[in-house]
Length: 483
Image (tube, rainbow, N blue to C red):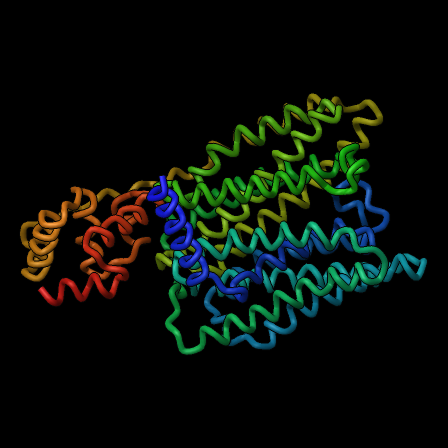
């Protein structure tokens, strides 16, 4: 019993040590951008007249949602060949534009007038600023190692969740300034990130002409994201700004629970999926989205609570996995990370925009009796069903065995691994992984080659180290060089 407890403690210590090694606060800046997107439109200090979670909160909402779509897609295309780490002016201007637009939108209701010029200025500045800072973070995260990125993106989502526990409940001018500080924090972390990476090799190169199949798959994923977020936006626009649970507790419980479960789902997917691709995730999310729509027509407390929670689960997990998947494509030198983030996130915002417009129209039509909410729900279910057909199927890469004409040094390494496996009792799979480690291959590379999950490869590597009595990759390589 004591031995089992000691092993568990050592495993937890090893896991935390690995997270600490691969995760730094400066890597979490995109989480503050996501937090701003949620908190700015949930904070009553910024939008006191919000009616539902939709663009009808304020004219600047509509302008911002429209501008960010164009800025994301156009920016991704125009800047795809640009080294954004050298764009110091853009790095400063983007967060300042978002903060300025937030303050401007917040003070308009305080002065008691509705100047369209100020609303348009607020929407344009926040839309352009948000798009630019998201594109820069896509470029920045592509410079990390795969294992670092797979820790940083979920951790950034956790930052968003924590911010949502505090910022929406700050009232008055302090609330406006608090929300406006989020993009500034993100910009400061981006500056620290690029400063740390100065002089280091870029993990993802800029590709002039990405493979045609990759581009087509990316477009299909963007369309699927559009359909999913159209559903999210439509249901959000038709929902009450505060349900009964929130009125009683004072906290947006469905959003917090759903975001938490969505983050856990994304982490489990990263750890245990044999390959991180969008198709594997969406096979699980599509039924959840259909269930949330099916529950929506019944506006009792329990169905509404479950529907909202499921939507938040899908939103959080899709956001995390879509970022990791797109940046993973860039790291495999298949495409520019800026183009991938611009296209997918642009279609996400387009789905939110169209969904909110549809929700506002449908809400009026339902209240007037010209549209049945059940007919609307059926239409949304059909939309998700057809979108599922567009999800590209991730092709699994077969394991290529060593050829008979392999170089002599490869055969020598293979023979050394066979001798070590026999001497220390390694399994067949552990011997296979040891051969890759002896060649200096990383764990992400081994995952792709052998089609294994991250957790499975990490477990095998841990067992190999224990059996060979080594504690690092360098000690393992030294073991081969010394034989």
